[in-house]
Image (cartoon, rainbow, N blue to C red; front, side):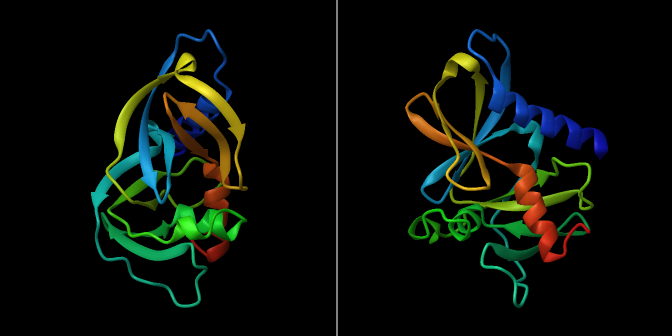
Length: 175
């Protein structure tokens, strides 16, 4: 799993730091979350699941939706919109219902759990992204957003996966 986490980290960093003129394309997935979309390198995603029941955890933060049984493991489930709202983002945008679950490979070798899940509000779509496809760039609005980039006409968020995983670890998963 350590090799996959290094690849995931490198892919996210590559997306964030792509320079103009680079001819390299990165295969990515655009994931609808509340009123925005996440842009994730596909190496970060282990599987996309249809919506299923999530077991709530008492006294957990609002962004921690609970746990999900997957391939014999219990995965922590993160609501990215609620996580950002708690960190100073748009709380109104965080009220939504999930449509599917994105099982994520961890991006950090220092974190103990191999996978976690994030709630998606629509069906993800595949895109190939090159530097010239990213028209605009802005810093993320919260701790959990590495960068905002314009992909064609759509603004997307490149999440800071290490920060998300650190938040999950504080709840007691992956210690």
